[in-house]
Image 1 (spheres, rainbow, N blue to C red):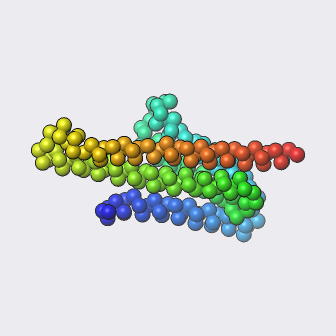
Image 2 (cartoon, helix red, strand yellow; image 1 turned 60 degrees about the vertical axis):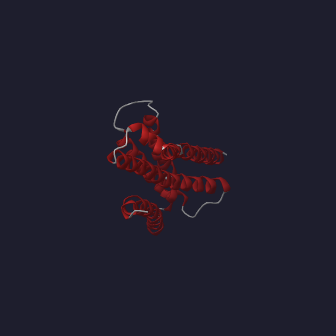
Length: 191
């Protein structure tokens, strides 16, 4: 694996993931130390809203609307999901006393990991295909020969594009568990 790939993709992803947990732990500790533990209970609501807002990227990707560049929507998706996840982690703290909140939190973490890993693998596949295509073109091959030579690589790249469907499926599972958690909390608050 190339050092530039590790520096550009892997290390930042790992650092952002670790920073997410450290930030959640620090915020949780600050709230405990200052007597504002109750704030964490309500961070689930804005955290959920931020995560829902992150789906604007998916709508743009599916061309439900066409305003704005896709790369800016992707950055918006990443930031909204990260901030929302931070709020939900602080909301959860170490105070989970039921099965569904634990499952929702675990599925949220899997969604985050699948976003980091899938995005990384897709960039690698696309980069390698483009690099191979350039080398073969410089070697004097015509487009048809390049396409034949890189057929398997292009299939792998197309397969990596499908990771989004897995990411979206896990996100849907997380959404379902979160909704169940929200409804059950609301149900018990009314009683």
